Length: 284
Image (cartoon, rainbow, N blue to C red):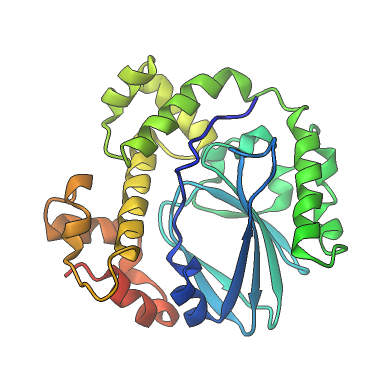
């Protein structure tokens, strides 16, 4: 059963903008999946680098599997900016980018245990997903990005029919995620639980298992991600105070906004990224 996630949720990564790609010397391509993976996989990703760089990923509630010719890894749900070293000169990286709460359609994994960490892909291996055991080797047998994406679509689709552990949580999780996205993360936990029709305690258990974060933490992550997206979409040539983009999201003063920046690690990006990010994230 597919979680009917709203198509309007677009996780935002500043380093995927044209400015970010130029600064970091990377080339990023995204390819949307076909059915039945819509609502599960946000996009397939291919990243090419000309020289070693550090690539900061902003928390957005999603999970991604990354593959290179040397290794593969799985990113648990992040609470702070994650700095990923892309160290292979003139290398290629391929990724499967999952919507929040959707990776358990394929892997029977407790996201609460994986949060805030990068794991080897062995962490996700399941008897119900034997087709994925050799995906690393098979990906780089394909010469094109489209070929790699089609291979992963096939393997992931085969796994969907074998995993039934997710279905009993679909109604609660799907409804809650839709409400969080529509409210841009501003709903209280109690208000959200009341609209979903379950207790806040039960909803938190569902989120910890499938998202890797509490309802409150996930909502705050979505709220910050929405704020960063708004900042990136400001009118060209028009410089507005940061609070202009955040008042209706609950950022009522500059100190509140700066505190949130520190919570997510935005203030402590690597020196490599500081010049690019300083103007983007400046709260003054």
